[in-house]
Amino acid sequence: MAWPTVDQWLSDLASDSPTPGGGGACALTAAASAALISMVCNLSIGRPRYAQHELLLTGVLRQATERRELALSLAEADAQAFQTVLAAYKLPRASDAEQQERARAIQSALAGAAEVPLRVAAIAADLIRLAGDISGRSNPSVLSDVAVAAVLARAALDSAVVNVEVNLAGLDEGEQRSRLAGQLASHATAAGAEAETVIRAARAKISGSIGGSIGG
Amino acid sequence: MAWPTVDQWLSDLASDSPTPGGGGACALTAAASAALISMVCNLSIGRPRYAQHELLLTGVLRQATERRELALSLAEADAQAFQTVLAAYKLPRASDAEQQERARAIQSALAGAAEVPLRVAAIAADLIRLAGDISGRSNPSVLSDVAVAAVLARAALDSAVVNVEVNLAGLDEGEQRSRLAGQLASHATAAGAEAETVIRAARAKISGSIGGSIGG
Image (cartoon, rainbow over all chains, first blue to last red; front, side):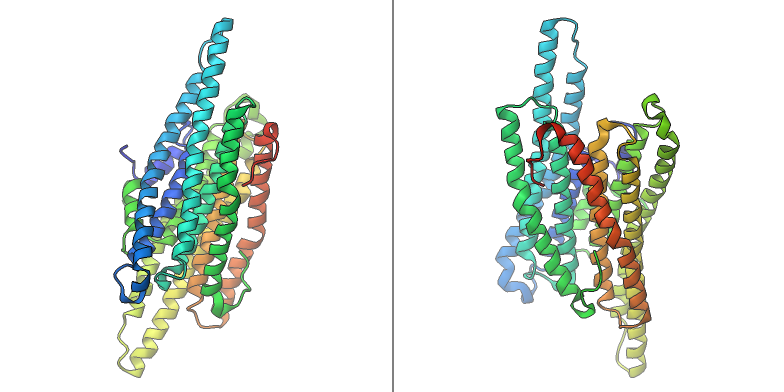
């Protein structure tokens, strides 16, 4: 995909065009979190002070880079999945056969549209883990960036949960909806708490000298 | 500023260049939240069903557009403020006079660098309020986008708190640090809880049909 400039993408997001929307913004938030994790690794790898963590940092850099690319491709996939849902709702429904065919197409499109944020949620959960892995094992001058990476990964996760739920809400009850809801819960439950731990630990180290008086 | 493409900006963020960093990512997250609020307004204004909220929606659209532009300019200001901090630390310190001058320059640069995320925090708090204002008063087909806007505004606020704190940590105790910390607390305390309320209300409406069983 040929991406527009940052300010143009934001204008496109703000417009009354159905895509990009919240799903794309969610995927790009995950991509920004991944990029920050890569930055912290890049500012730590090759420096004697963090030599003992070199193997860890190199592995995290590789995983964060992969996830950034995946998240970018999911932002694009989200727009396509949404267009498929819109197209399904526009199918003809004059006869019983058409109504059945349209209902099947809508169910299939909604399940497909739920899969994209589910994959973003999985990436966000991975990024929270990666931020935790490098916290305290990388250049302390960019510790605030580790915290911001965790904040953004948590936001990507929370947004993805909303975006899965809005597609599940239109799905008929049954095996497929239960499976998707179960997958969502598996990503969301532990990772949210883990993000909070990473953010708190970083803030405590950063603000040690000014006490815990600043709310947030 | 001439913005790069989205994927190029993410590559720049991931690189070992000191800017863009967490401050820029934080400001752009606020801009994405503002853009989503604009999108919801644009998909509601002019439609008979939301005519009773037209005045509100038009006002919110104007405020969200302003804040998107402000957030974009703050992403740029953040990079400049960070370069000023780096330059201050590199000043000569051979003589007592030079050491004093360098210390003064560092204090001034850190205070300037704290002001930028403080302004992002104020914008994020505004965006949380705007998302609350349009929740239930706009097109329900984009209710999930209201929730994502609130999630992203809260993430911008939380990131801004970290970015203010990391600059305050280097400031000498005194009137200036107390003033900046006080301003931060005024933005952060109420807005975080308000964001949670907006997100919960939207999720409850979206997921009404599938119960409250999905964690998040």
